[in-house]
Length: 409
Image: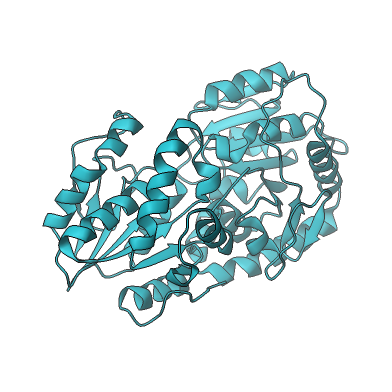
């Protein structure tokens, strides 16, 4: 009887980072990757199920699911448990269990209804709907993801357990304390709004640019610092310039007076986030946003879109309101109206939700007492997601000492 860990690859995304952090704390006898792509430190030596890499098209990777499943089945037996993260790995896990009889535990990291649309959705949604109910246990990282799986993908609710993402608060605090290079320190002498995450459709960064173009701060020009890389970089650069914003795009030495800083991937994003005046999450959909909890652990006051899954559970636990149209002060941050996702032209007037965002950000930049209050509250809230506690819940689940349906907040 063994425990094997399975994921698509170890790219630098939030799901992969969570998988690697948990893997270091979960006893396992084998780490399996569908593709040969390792950009973060693995918890153990990986075994690759293919030679495919980042350069392989998503279509070919998806088409290879049955091949991966046969290879996984050959490595497992009925007494094994395989824990998988991310949809393709989850589908491989379930198909392989049909052959080998192993216990398939799959973890959904995002809200599939938001993540999969168009041609990709036409392929993945039916596969999730057909195969997920066959898993022994489905782990959702938020109650919103659980609700989506049950309502839109026919997954029996009694098969779904919720375990929130974990956060190594001590490691983040240590990293957050590092100083900035002199050029970056000059940027952060200004009131900085910071955002962190992949430059993808889910994060809605074009909304953040439109919002920022209307943000005012008393006495000094604010700056927007975007930490992360992704396929929308060129689009966002062009969009920001179309708004009349001066733009810096890393790497290199940042000027002190740009409006927007596309900083790119940073080995230590926390030293930037901790020195920002505000952290903003404009996501259109989420599962459970690591970036939001990490910002809390950095002591950054946070504002977040009240999208369907994730942020409300973090910032206002125990509440269920949706569809807010104005700013909602929450115990651990501020929830703001969900954004439409429409890619309006740079010259189009702000949408109602964008205006609410711009007004609230401008207000908070001037309110030192409120910022200090949310900084303290956020640090306390981050402790609720301590990684060691989360890992203990995972160990119980993998050992069969907890039952599906257990809900962790």
